[in-house]
Image 1 (cartoon, one colour):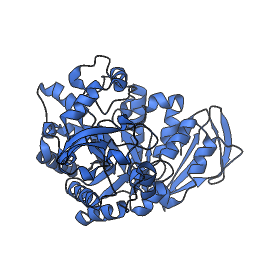
Image 2: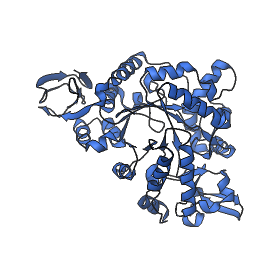
Image 3: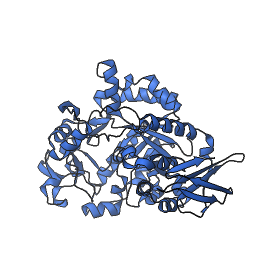
Image 4: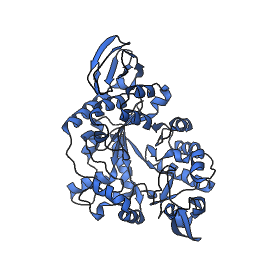
Amino acid sequence: MRANPTLYQIDTRDWLYRIARKLNRPPTLDDVPEADLSQLKAQGFDWVWLLGVWQTGQLAIEISRTNEAWQQSFKEAIPDLQLQDVAGSIFAIQAYTVHTEFGGNAALARLRRRLRAHGISLMLDFVPNHTAIDHPWASAHPDYYVPASEAEPDPRNYFLVNTNRGPLHLAHGRDPNFPCWPDTLQLNYGNPELQTTMIKELAQIATMCDGVRCDMAMLLLPEVYRRTWNIDIQPFWPRAIAAARAISKNFLLMAEVYWGLEWELQQLGFDYTYDKELYDRLHHGDAASVRGHLTATPEYQSKSVRCLENQDEPRVTQAFGEKHKAAAIIAYLIRGMRFFHDGQLAGFRLKPSVHLRRRRSEDPDPDVATFYNQLLQLLKDDIYQSDWKLLEVDDTNSIIAFQWQTASRTSTVAVNYSGQPAHGTLQTPPREIDLEPWSYLIF
């Protein structure tokens, strides 16, 4: 694997929906056109993350279709919304088997082989914090979940489940800083048997793909879990990661993580962690702040996932406006994994929903599409896998400059990350540069 790989996130539901319109019948993963895979290869992607391949249940669909708080966002995502478009959250997982509508495990295995033939690795989801409400464990193993007595007393935070022990109120999954996810149940990591079972689940997933993106991975850190649920737990990630690597020593684990806990999860064995801090600093547009973040240790930088949009963030064209291209040059031409979201390369402006089967049709933005095509072709050059260093720029706090270098070649990048023209002098190599607002040059 390249030192600084590229990853493309695809919404599996929407991908198949678009294929269905061409075939005029329900498709499976076997119907993914070879041309789509060839294009991913031509663009230089090392990884494809298929978002939302796992089996979900009917209850998640019903909750999504009846939750009034979600309806407005659905209509904003798809103005001509139909009831059948609401398919339930992809994160309300009923089983770690490929959705029957997508062709099941066998269809995924065949698609994985096709991706491998193009030199592309497959990443899938692992959602360790919670399951769907209608997961079989809810009735057969209610002790796998946090009971209402250990959750907040607010009735909106738990659900009455008919279990083999009779009706029980079990807590919905949640992040301690936000309302619960009402289509999920919270797994109880204070139960050693549950931990062992989840480790087996991850090991099984490791036989089906080349890597996983671990949803909200920091929620399983003992101190975070205790703060959220007042339950003491044994560390989960070291044993889980070891089990996955026992299946495949090169199995890749990427953590979705926030709250400054990235380094801690890297030390536990994660290959990559989300770099939300860089995203936020780029979004705020403070060049000095961005530069300060890029002074972190080489190990931290190389294990960071650089991203300008994903299923949780707004489209970059909307969030970043005129500084979009400058932000992209910084994010994708530094060390780390380069993460691109489905629709980003075309300049789409409408954020999709993880509850919906499709996204609204949009026309590509030719200027944005040209920019990303050029950027992806640039990233295929091996020089952007070489030695990287941040450069000093005299006379300004607006310009961020850095350099890639091999024994025979050098690539220097300078970006004016401010809303004003800027002038400065690079110390290495000596060169005076003038840049317009939110502009860049590569030489």
